[in-house]
Length: 125
View: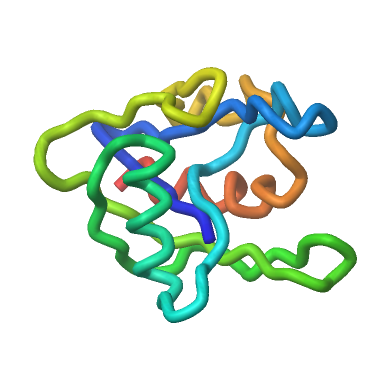
């Protein structure tokens, strides 16, 4: 699961620190669903762990993206920041807020690229 967090017309992008084969590439924050969790619960938990923020998970964004030779699927959801706190890079090397004209300024992970293609319509609302 991954979160598209939009604030003031910009989307949050996070730079991976590990593993070495993807370090330096950019992604949307998120992670895996643990046993007993819904996708929405997992995403809310991951945002606390990775970014130190609480979010309200909303609608799906874009298509499911196949990962690891079709053995896993990435699902992405809109997420709205709660409580007034701003994200911090707790598990990433860096974070950036990207406007629609900056979406191509980072080197996205392949799985995130189909979601990036959906963002111009969401960022211009």
